[in-house]
Every structure is written in structure tokens, then in C-alpha cells.
Length: 125
Image (tube, rainbow, N blue to C red):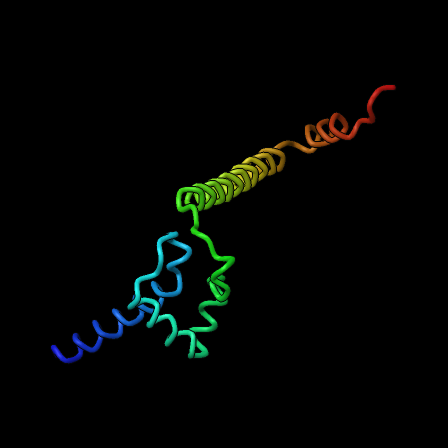
């Protein structure tokens, strides 16, 4: 069992080192340590590494700059808040309409006709 834990830890550490070597210019303006530079060179020789670098936008290090983490978190939070607010608005609107339909269906035919006449009456000129 310890052998499997060791293998899992080694694979996990390799993944962390590989990703760290790719995202370094997005995190800091400091020069990349020599060990990470060597890891990056090896990672970019693989198809998977090239694909990940392309997804992260770090294939061209000249254009890669540090990401403002606070701004990214703020933007993400605002997007989530907007989505939750819209979802809540839809839920409230659906409940209100459902309640109105139930109330309307509970009216007598005479009251329904009267309400239709009031709602559908053309505006006065």
C-alpha cells in the first residue's frame, strides 16, 4: 500500500511542477527558477504540455503577464452574483404568475369576464 501512495504522490508532484512551470509568468514577474525552466522545456516537448500551454495562454511568454488575482476573483464573484440574482428573479416571477393563475382560475365566470374586460379594454384616447 505505501508503494501506491508513493506513486500517487510522485504523480501529483509531477503535475504540480508541470503546471507551475507553465503558469509562472501569469503569477509573477520574477524570473522563473532554473528547475522550473527545465521542467517547462520538457513539458512543452509533449503534445499534452503544448495543449495545456495553449489553453492557459502561455505559449508566447513575451505576451504573458501576471494576472491580477484580486480583479479576477472580483469579476468571478460579480458574475456569480448576477447569475444568482437572475435565477432568483425568474423563480419569483414564476411563483407570482403561478399564484395569479390559481387565483384567476378560482374566480367565477362572471368575475373572469369582468377582469378580462378591464385588462383588455383599449386605452382611452
